[in-house]
Length: 347
Ligand code: PBG
Ligand code: ZN
Image (cartoon, rainbow, N blue to C red; front, side):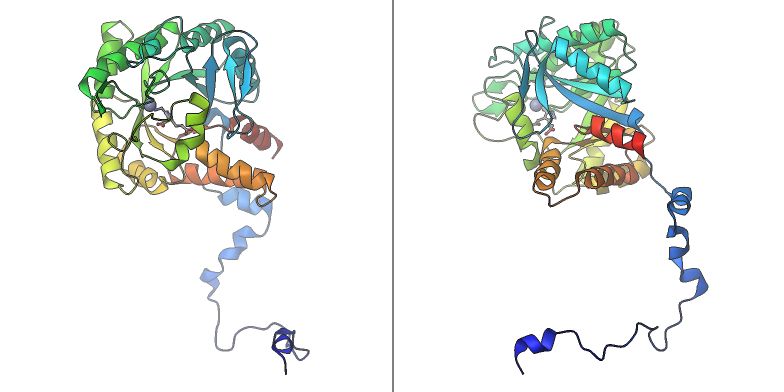
């Protein structure tokens, strides 16, 4: 007998039958509520709502400028006029908000352009405000898109300084709030950044501007595509001296508690899919709204596999977003906001 003969289906195979000696107790029959889509719908625990999606937009100077980002299929750097067009479409789909990232024309070691009221972010915010769309307007607050070295703070040699960075972050937050941001989102992972921004906003009379804190932000490989988009890859070293060790969950909760104490209005974890445990634990611990950021690398993984036909794009995207919601996120920052909103409307 050859090996092949061994694996050929047996012609004497029996009809399926219950395992001898096993009776399934009535209360163990969990399949009852899975029989039809209507039954499943009755007991579904987590649902997605486009109103809780936030779409990141990369904005640049100029007019009619649209530069696709290679590692982020479907995403592009947009000038303010095209960003408003994109916003109009997102609002039409019921998406809840936007998160703006600016890519300046020129960078400098201190990232001064981050607080320039004439920069692409304030320019886009003013136009969006004038457009009067039903979207919450948020702006990311960091220096890495604006510094020549790509780090999130100001330097002394190759040291990334904490306290001297805080004033620059507060100044940027004030510039964005004055231009129309309802939410500012500090992502630099400098200690005290939420307190510094809250104080800066309040001193400028911007007491109604909310803070979405990137509270638990891991030093992740999954930000790679974003750094190409923003041209913000660190020129030396890496971000592990300020972003969190991805191995740490308890420390993530401590970061969130500190940001809550400093006055954050929303606490965010990032990346989303590698932080579901943190999200679930934070849900039990904090009453503040929780956000999760499905980052550029999460997008890249889904898009690349879908493009090869290895994953069903729609099902995979909705499943990952649902898992993020199930873990405890109230709002989700995702590059897939438009498609997800469209699919949910069809369902
Ligand atoms: C800026 C910032 C980054 C992201 C959000 N804000 C990049 C980084 O920290 O390197 C990542 C977003 C993404 O990957 O989609 N500090
Ligand atoms: Zn940064």
